[in-house]
Image (tube, rainbow, N blue to C red; front, side):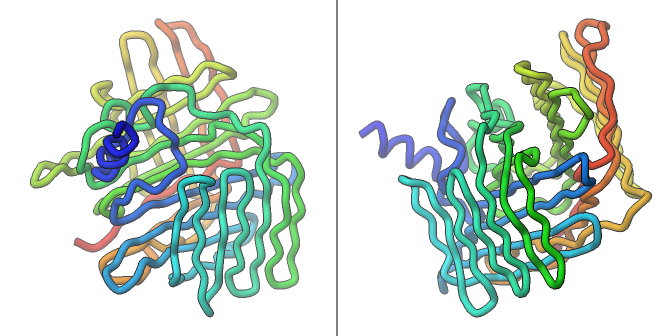
Amino acid sequence: MFTRLVSAYRSTGADVPFGNPYPDHGTEMEGWFWRISDEASGRALVALCSLNRHPAGDWSTAAVAVHPGLTVRAGALGGARSQDSPFSVSAGDEAGRFSVGTEQISFELGDLSLNMAFHQPVTWPKAFGGGGIFSAIPYLNQYWHPYYLGGKASGTVEYGDESWSFTDAKLYAERNWGAGFPLRWWWGQAHDFGADDVCVAFSGGLLSLGPIGRDVNGIVVRLGSKVIRMTPPVLVRSEVGDNQWLLRGRSPRYEIEVQGDGRHLPPHVLPVPLPGERRNIDTDFEHLGGRLRCTVRERGRLLFDGTSELAGLEVGTRPK
């Protein structure tokens, strides 16, 4: 009985406290995203997949992007399916295929092949997800949850004449789900701050519940074992434009400022799903090697001030 109640509640998009971040909720779009980087070599990649629901058959948006360079391989794949226990998501047709689980992922898109395994993940420690109390509100248009705030990834990506084999690259992973992407959004993530054990992620966009909509921002910072989340009702202000990002959040205890700059390099163009139309649109622009500075204060005392030169910084839109 309890399991059925939890399943019914999750089908609204909302999550229960301390819930499992992997499984499909049953919303119109379910997304999984991984980002790895190696500061010593200056390399980074992102991989993403989704399960998009449609009466004619569930399908998936899948993509892998690699930095340096502007390599992107993407597709709208048929045959998408998910499984809760053990968790897995897969899709595949003549355009490509992928299979992902809790500990490893595999993608084949055109001439690109990616295989990687995860170990020593730094998991999300709080009761509510990345959206805070908003994670428990049903029927929002979009939910966001960064569930790996660190960890290691090992594997190989091959494309064209290029190949990159990596061991113990830094790992970040997140989920997003709901009715599809908002009309506009912005996002950033970094974990390459030299010797400092720090992970920074932020997300913002037009959040709506029925006819009510407003821009909402969230910041998550992990400093060693301490995880600070700033989401509503904490006010986080943002200024995004001209390939620059600025977010400021202040709670009774903490002050966080995040500055992102992608003006020095062109963005990778990633696909955005339109679930009801069974197609992708290329309106997601991500700088895989951007610059991000993060400053954290606790009751006025400086806890952290560092800069990453290998951050992911993103802005996107979708048609009404």
